[in-house]
Amino acid sequence: MRPLDLRSDTVTRPTPEMRAAMASAEVGDDVLERDPTMAILEARVADLLGLEAALWVPSGCMGNLIGLMLHLRRGDRFLAPAQAHVLGSELGTGAWLAGGMPEALAWEGGPGRPTPAQVTKTAGSPGPYYTLRSRLLCLENTHNFAGGTVTPVAEHRALVAAAKAAGLAVHLDGARLWHAAAALGCPLAELTAGVDTVQVCLSKGLGAPMGSMLGGSAAAMVEARRLRKMLGGGVRQGGVVAAAGLVALDYLPRVAEDHAKIQRLADGLRAFGVAAPVPETNILLVPVADAPGALTALEAVGVRVLPVGSAIRFIAHRDLTAGDIEEALRRLEPVALSLRSA
Ligand SMILES: *Cc1c(COP(=O)(O)O)cnc(C)c1O
Image 1 (cartoon, rainbow, N blue to C red):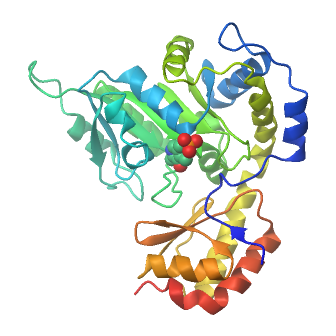
Image 2: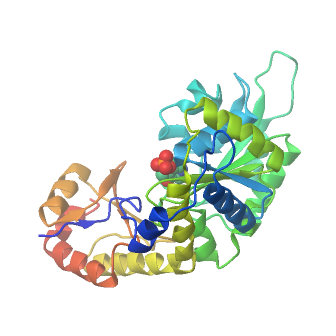
């Protein structure tokens, strides 16, 4: 039985178009000078994000880490929504390598989102020399572990305004900013308004084999390039993978198809009596009573998923067809009891 892989939108394989672009990519040494294809990709993404400049990085984690390193000095506090990727899923690099003191903000503004008032209150005001200094707000849109939830434009702007008023820089973890923009039907640049840096993943949802982009001011990207080199992310003929990244951007107008796929899955599961919420983007979190039991039952019928806390996470992506979703539902119906929430 062919496994249906809904573990992540990173499991996609490069398309024939990507492989062809990789084979014929124009390249140079990106450490010594510039790789021409990476330069084209960086200019394209900066433009899409409405920012001055962008920098290719091998992974989203490195992009976020460079963002944090740009804004923090050792001992500085950074705020992020509870369960943000930078808090729990980057192996503590925000503290270990960027020197930050993490502060999680509860989701008082909705799933995955703090309120501007929380930002103001938690940032506090600069006290005497012996007080902890808050320097950065790190946002996440969409918020992965809240279930791919979207921060709308007005709320984004209010959060950034609160951060700026409190003297904080803003980094946006936009691993799936594509999905937020698609769900809202707005340009990507609306969702980067006011941020100092943003990280977007080419390998999440868009199908590139690797790579993320960090965006920000031209001056910030000069410093970011230095930090990338320090972290071992200075690559030579990176145009080979940047070429795939350029092709991956062609999927942007189709991102909403993956939202429709996961909505269909959620509707189907609800018809089987499963307590599936209405997904906002391409992620569906189903709360279950027994996550390990559910994983085993689903694996046995050839549906691959991942646990997120006490929930099961289903993610739709470009390598799953609408027919695959119907097939997944056929396989899930007999084991739907394993997805019960109590
Ligand atoms: C996957 C992810 C990252 C990190 O990306 P990698 O390319 O896996 O390092 C960062 N933030 C969020 C929200 C993610 O989902």
